[in-house]
Structure formats: structure tokens, C-alpha cells
Image (cartoon, rainbow, N blue to C red):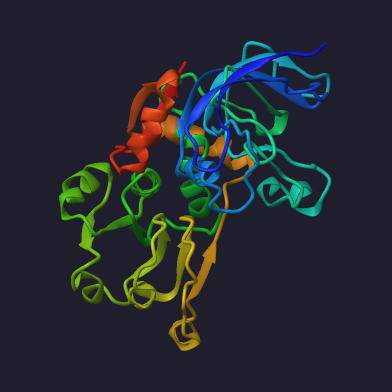
Length: 335
């Protein structure tokens, strides 16, 4: 039996979102159907609305930071039941049969289904996803503000967990925005000595409140002063920066890690890496198991996104707020 979902869709590249009814098609046996309570807005939603990555299809309902209640569960959905409150992020499915999936790295599945790639997402009253990507929300976490954890949060938490960052490490965070403000909280609670890099000196006090022990003005000479001291630098910004200076700030065996979608090439001289056995890497989100671990970590340490709330019907005003760089630090749409 067919259903009709109601959402807010971009009908063309860069277009304003308008109300949109759609038939999601037959529900697959491995899927759950979630009644949306709230949905965060991510810069990736803007990129998809604007087709910055060349893979958008219109009409498109954005939204991939969903909190909601399961109202239907397919017969092959495991570990979940109707009435469970869950969160959904960038991924809506994985094959569960390839080598990455079988080794617990479902986020690296070549056939992974994106929440808003070729299908409709969470700026709607309902959304569907495979059971493995619908993660139960711990009761102590606020459902009204937790949506951004399922994209922004796991994007910065996963490399901390997956690349063996130690509590004794000195770690830098580039960019104190939607991703960076969560990275500061995670790293401080992880036990690291945390340095925040920002081009806005006015953000220094807030960065320290969020967990930074040191704040460096990335436009000044502060980078030179810490040459050779950092074990790990996580780049959450999406702008082209002086990458040689950040590589120079790494200690031997240090790593410069990208989670921000920097669209310009990153020029690197091989000798800047060879001498100190330094490395450059990047990562998408984390596995479902890592998402669950992150949520437990947040519950244990009282970590939460800093959010602003808009009504779902005010989605265009919320998107304009984000485009203008005024979001502090994540926006959540509430139904």
C-alpha cells in the first residue's frame, strides 16, 4: 500500500525549498520508517541544494541529522522496535556483505546509500533507512538538540577513535564552527591537550569554554611558535589554508587529518612529510558501532551540540542564516 510523505524540497539547483508531497515507494524488509521529530541542518545540505558536488537530483528533500520515533519496522530489521527513538545521519543503508561491511566499516561500503543522494531525506514528516544506520538515542541525551551528533558529531569523533588518538596527545582543531565546536569537547573529555586554531580572535573565549587549552590565531605568527609540537591536527574548515604551516606544526609521526570538504587541491611537498614521517589523511563518518560509542561518550561526559532552533516551516530562513555564517553552531529544525 502506497504512502505519501510531506517534506520541503529544492526543485532546482540553488532553489528555495517549497512544500512537497512524495511517495517513498515500497518499504524494504530491512528498513525502518521514522516519524521525524527534528532534523539538523548541515553545510552538506547546502552543498547538495547547490549541487556543489555534482551529484544532486531534483526535486530533493535535504536533511540527514534526524531524530525521530520508529513507527514501522521491516521484518528483517534487527534490534529495533516500533516506539524506539533513534537518530539517522548521512548514510541510510549499506550492503552488509562486502569486506568493509563485514569488518565493521560500513561507512566505507562502496554501495552505501546516502540519505539525500538519489532519495529524500529528513526535512519531512517521515524518513526511511536501513536498520543498521538507525541508532538508538540514550535517554539522557536531549532529542531536541542531538540530531547534529549523527553527522557533525560522528564526523569528528570517528577519526579520534579510529586513528588511535591517545589521552597524552597534543591535538589541534582547525575551525571552530559546526564540526570544530564538537571536536573541542570530544578531545578535552578524551584527555588530550587541545589547541584551537581560528582566524577570529573573538572566538578565543568560546573555544576555551568548549574545551581548548590554547587558542592560536591562524593569521598571525602563532603557528610558527608551535612548530613540531602537535601529534594530530583535525581540519574541520572547508577553506584553502597555509597547509605547509600546519604540517610544520606536527611533531614526528604527526597526522594532518581532513574532515572538512576543502574543494581546492592541497599542495604538499614530499620532503615536508618524509623527514618527520608525517602523514595526511581524510575520513567520512564512522560506522554504526562507532556512532553508538560516541553517543555513550556524550552521555557520560555531558557533551552536546550548541544549537539554534527553527520551525520546519521556516526552513528557508534557517538556510539563509547558515549561508550568512551566523549559525552558532548548529541549526535544528523542529516539527
